[in-house]
Length: 221
Ligand code: SF4
Ligand code: SF4
Image 1 (cartoon, rainbow, N blue to C red):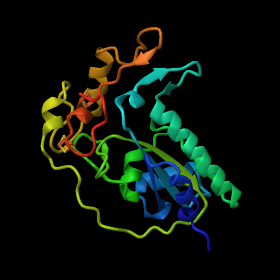
Image 2 (spheres, helix red, strand yellow):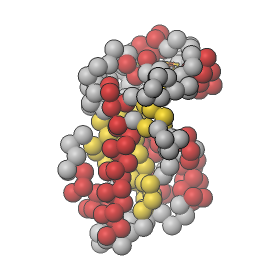
Image 3 (cartoon, protein in one colour):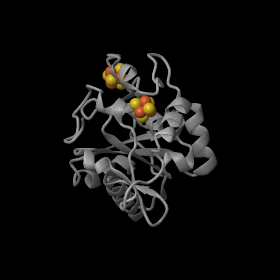
Image 4 (cartoon, rainbow, N blue to C red):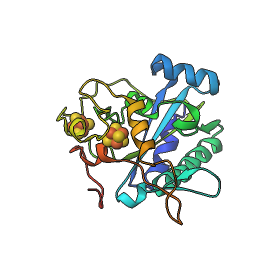
């Protein structure tokens, strides 16, 4: 039998900045399982692509002509996802790229954590053990089977409290995250209004910038 990993790994080897994980949909938590059974009912496996953000410039977001928000890390991830989907397609497997969380409603970080990419930290980023929060996540749904075996992952967040102290909105607590407070603060700051001729969206990244986990990208504060 051929598994998703047998097809994905040769693609990923061409991209040292990336890693991929696969997990059977049946091993996901109820919320994520329901998402896949509703929108991708034929898919038995979720694939997570993690793209390591190496420079802060790769994570600068712009509003483009298509009306969508783009950054280099996201654009490159999408191309690699297409390559993975094509490779799986060439082996007879149906594969779809799941739209970004804002459009699909799926929490990519929850799927990534379940698949073994890292652990969600106090700042609610998926923290990769080596890359910290500097990982752009994408998710695909495929009917290829997976070799996944459940493992017990050690915590990555040290609960140092840096993100709690640094958040200007007071949205991060040791044991909870107030997404509404975060979004309201960012809206007040005009973050969602494109700035300058390039239509840049200057998103708050303070809670990632202060996190001591992983390899901080060049250009981060
Ligand atoms: S993005 Fe900014 S406002 Fe939102 S939780 Fe992080 S530091 Fe706070
Ligand atoms: S800054 Fe500290 S508490 Fe916050 S996510 Fe990173 S390691 Fe965890």
